[in-house]
Amino acid sequence: MGHDSERNRQRTVRHLLVCAVLLLSACYRSRADIQRDYARDELAPRKLGAQDPLQRPAAPEEVRVYRVRAWADATYRTQTTRWEERIRALVERASEALAPEFGVRFQLVELHPWERASRDSPHIEDSLQALEAQDHGDEVDWVFGFIGARAFTNDRHDAGMARLGGRHLVLRGSERMAMLKHIDHLDALPQAERDALYAAGKKHSETVVLLHEWAHTLGVPHDATAGAIMCGQYEPQQRSFSQASVALIRVSLGFRKPQTPVDKKAWQRALLAAVDERSSEFTGDGCAQVRSWAKSANEVQPQTQLTPDEVDAANRVISQINSDKPEEARRDIERLTRAHPEHGLVRELACRVEVARDAKSASALAQCRQACRLGPSTTPCVLAVQGVGSVPLPLVGEMLDLAQDRLRGHGSERPKETLDLATTLAQLHRLAQAEQVAQQLGLLEDGMAIRQRIAVRRSWLGLPPGALTPEREPDFARAYHSARTGLAAAAPRALAELERDFAGVPGTLALRCEAALRRRQHPAGRKLCQAALAAWPETWQAHVLLAGLDLAQRHAVAAVDHATIVVEGDRSFETGWRLLAKALQAAHRPAEVAALRERYAAQFGHALTQEPK
Image (cartoon, rainbow, N blue to C red):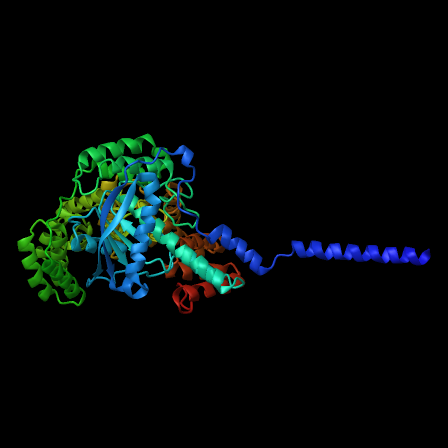
């Protein structure tokens, strides 16, 4: 009996151990399991199609066939195996996505190699302009341009581009979409699984970007609905247009019929009404883009068609400009301008040629002003005013205002032009205007960088937003710099004029503080610097002056506080780093001095050795 009991006990223990092993094995998840779940949830593309067909209007019974001509540049053809087959398959996938919901199919009637001298430009909008010059869309409804991939990105502004209401769109190869880069890290998955995921991701990203840019040509702005095709960033989870985008596409397709002239004014009115009805479902910038396009008083007139020989001549001019041969370029461009005096892109090339010859010449100003007037690009407006010393200020304002009006509502579609304009406005101290333009770049890296640079300029000038009207900001900047120069030369007249015209501006108070400290009127100077900081704590010149004064009067801790604000605000200001190092030494904080020296060396590439006197 005892032996039976012992055997039963052992049998029970074995069963429990087996159950425990099975339970643990069921709970254990390998690296491959975890990576497979991640791939399924985050990287695997969703099937394109309406999310909830029951909430959508019935699809049109009629299927319309729209003619498409496509061009592929040399980089795309080199990077893409069987490039013709790839493009035809992409156009077919887009048709399959659009036909059930919109009754739209694309017919690829022509596919050509695209030879162009400017193919190496890093800016996709340059490619869009080149496509518009190459092919005006005769006898087709849309023109597609395919260019090579450049870098890993999920930014649709680099993956593709089209103008609101246009007929041209440019798409980069999808080999370097950032999402696809993550697949390489799934090292626990079999290569076959990774290859399948990569292939599906490429097809999905190509198709979604094409549909996104196509919708832009129908006047559809960026969408606020998560996971929708019209969102500003590409995600594998995107599968359909939102209901708001569907409504706008249907409105536009009512006017954009195959091989039929468009009543543009009626189309714009109808689209504007549809956007206003559903404005909460689009981004604020997107609604502004549509309203600006629909109400624009500065429409660029249709360009006359360039012949193939003239297109070759235009490409030759671009190559000659890039090769620093402006005199040769001038001979070619003169023939083009005689044949097409009102062609905006030809005039832009003429502007660039004259700028290459002599940026400050009367001829450069005349050509760029004409090109600025004609559009569609704002580049000539910027090129003309960059030689501001030779351009009358009223004319500067005229061209910059025209450029801003032309980009209003289209900044995110034309990021290079927008960035160039914002940078030029900031350089001319038209800071409020620069901020308005830069705001159109949204969360793009370049947009955040230029807004930071504008903020730095404001802080060094002691000019907070709203302290002056936008028109007076350039006058203040000129008076401020003149007064600073006058202080260094012991000529106080300019400071007196600054006080007269801009009393109470924090920057004016900071310069008055500096003048008092130069006269060794330390209590009065401190009071003026404190008044500047009370008016605006970001007045960095006041912080610099107080840091130096506190060091001289052995208030080391206060000096550290002021110098830290300057260094953290503008890390390119080396004097601030040296001032902070001396303040930390005076405060007996050696560990922080050592850390600061390391940061300085990483920032500037050399050691922090010179101390302020």
